[in-house]
Length: 494
Image (cartoon, rainbow, N blue to C red):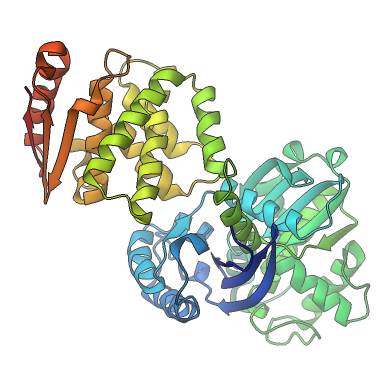
C-alpha cells in the first residue's frame, strides 16, 4: 500500500452509523474525517426480529450521505461492517440489497467473534504498544464484546447479547429511571455475562479498557462534572446512577456532558456497565480511543499485505483443524481457479471471487472429519457455524454453498444458482473435484471451458477421453446433472 492512500471504514451499529476516513502512512492511519449519525436501527426490530420500514429508511438515508463522501473511492479502499442488529434481523437481505446499492460498496455482516477481533485490533492499534494484559469491553447497542489480549494479539474473544439499546428498551421503558429498574437491569445483565468470568478471569488481566459509545459517554460526563479525566471509576459510576435515579426520567436528567444522541440509551448502557464492574470487581476502566471502525481500517492494510490477510490464516487453521488432505486441496484449488479464469475475466471483482473459490476448494473436504457419508453436507454446516476470523457471515455462507454443491444434485442450490458468478464458481469447483477424483493432478490444460449466457461448454483435446476414460464417464454424468437445473452444460469429449 502506497503512502497517502485514503481508506474508509463504516460501522453500521445498532445505535449509530459511523464513517471513519484515514490516510495510510508507513503502517499507520492518520484521521482525515469522522462522521457519526444516530440511526437507532436496534430499536426498529419488532418481536419477530424484522426491521421496521422506518428503521431501514433511516439507515438508507444515512448511507446515501456517506456514499456522497466516498465518491471516487475504490472497493479495496473501503470496508463496511454491520453488527448485532443486522445479525438478528430476519429481513436483513432486504435492507442490505438497497443499502449496498446506495452505498456503492459491499457490507459485511460479521459474527460476534469477528466483531470482537476487529474491536481489539482497533483498540490495540491506538494504544501505546506494551505487554500489559488487557480486558477490552465494548458495550454496543444490542451486543457487548469482551476481549482478552496482549499487545496486538487477542487471546480470547466473546460476544454477548446485551447492550445499551436493548437494555434501555427492556428495562427503562419511556426513559423512566428508578432504583428497582437499575437493580433488575443489572441482575439481568449479570445473568447473560456470568459465564464471562470463566473466560476472562480477573487474574488473567491487569488493565480494563472500555471501547465504543457507552464508556466514552460516561467518562465525558464524569470529567465534565469534576471527576478525574480519562477514567471511569466505581465511585463515579455510583454517583452518576444516583443522579439518574434522582431525576426519575431521561427527560428530567440535567447533567453536563450528556449528549443528546446518547440520552435515550444511557440508562441501558450504564446498567450494563455497572453489572460488568460488579461482576469482575473492577475499580476503574480506561476509555479507549480505538473502536471497531479503526480495526476495520487496519484490516484493509493487512489484506493488502502478502500473508497479512487474516482470512488466509483462518483457512489454513480450518484445514488443519479438520484434517483436510492438504495435497488434494491444493490440486482442487489450482484446477478450479484455472477453470474459473476461462469463464470469468479476472478483473478486480472476479479476482476476489476467484480467491474465495480457492478458499472453498481448500476446505471442500473438511466434512470428512465428521463422516465420509454426506461429507459435503457436513463441510457446509461447519462453514455456516464456525467462528472464522476475518470472514463475514455472507462470505462464509457462500463458501458453505460451494462446498455443499461440490457434488450431487443441484436442486438444493436452486436459489443460489440464480447468481451468475456463483454458478461459474460452482461449475469450476464441481469440474475440479471430478477431474481430481483419482487424487492426482489431472491433465486439466487439455480441458477448455467456455461460457455464454446461461450455458457452459467443455471440450477436450483429441485422445483425452481414451487416456482418461473414468473422467470422461464422470463428465457425461455431470452433463446430466446440469440438465436438471436452469443452466445448460454440454461437453465435447474427444
